[in-house]
Amino acid sequence: MKSVKHLVVDLLSFHPVLLYQGQFDAECGVASNDAWIHALPWWVNQRAMGYLKRHANLWQLIVRNTGHMVPHDNPLYGQLMIERWIHEKVLRKEYKR
Image (cartoon, rainbow, N blue to C red; front, side, top):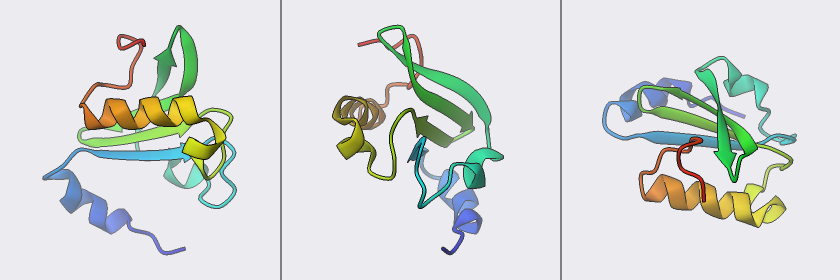
């Protein structure tokens, strides 16, 4: 797998970025992106659905109990993640569904 970390700096100058991974993703391990940003929980209905990290325009979401195909493994969490990202809602506790 080839790193695209060098592209992220330029991309963040123009666009917000959401990185998401399943907690059990064996293909693209969570640990490789873990050092980038500080951790915050992602909540829906008072339950932690994953772990959110952010630095400026860069967002990383680790979705709990999912693998490489988050929308397949947990359709609700996948849908909420995409909807909230598209509609520019922050993926935090304040935005419960």
